[in-house]
Image (cartoon, rainbow, N blue to C red):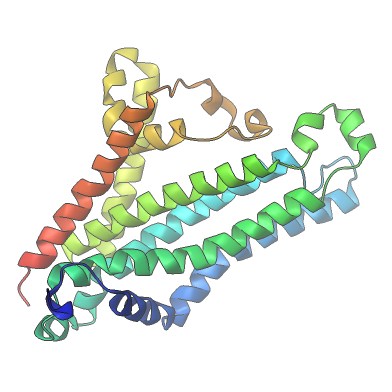
Length: 285
């Protein structure tokens, strides 16, 4: 039997310790809550005030508003996941604690892998309640029947169904998990927070450019296998009123077979995490 301290699979105690270390970073936790829940509440409040002043403005409920909330959470969540991954991936090195952890005899691979579920637990602890608030507003703050009739938007002013809520939540979490994992791997690879955030930001921008190029030049469509945004957008569920929220994006052809999407997603996760693990194992203590 492999002794617990030398096992390469992190045990629950190690993951819990990592999570508690992150939770004690109060500025980080406050920034995550303010950057996600705070911004969502500001948006909901602004819409409610505008609706109270101008009744022709739709209230903060219904399918179309729910779609707007999800994409707002996607934008703020990606930034949060990026910075969280950069901090978690290089925390031991930046705090000069890496040598002390190695001298305990624990597997370096276990120390590295424990960062993934610990950071995801903290990210979920912020994103899931924020998403619950978005769902609650979309379901309860519905437009009146006269508003639906006048604007003929009955399909997007109705409350989103349970299948839409679950699918949208899963799709949102999937994207944040991918961003967090890739940024964590980059941070572990370079050993510093700032370069990791810079590299991850450049990857996001390059991904946007690549998506535009593939849409403009059909002959380059084979590049869809290396475009993570293309892959994740192709996995999106049907959102109510998405045409009013995403505009020209609905005109893109993101069709890919399911097995290609799954394979490309696995490669995007395994390769960066594998490089980060190799660097963590071979790094001088």
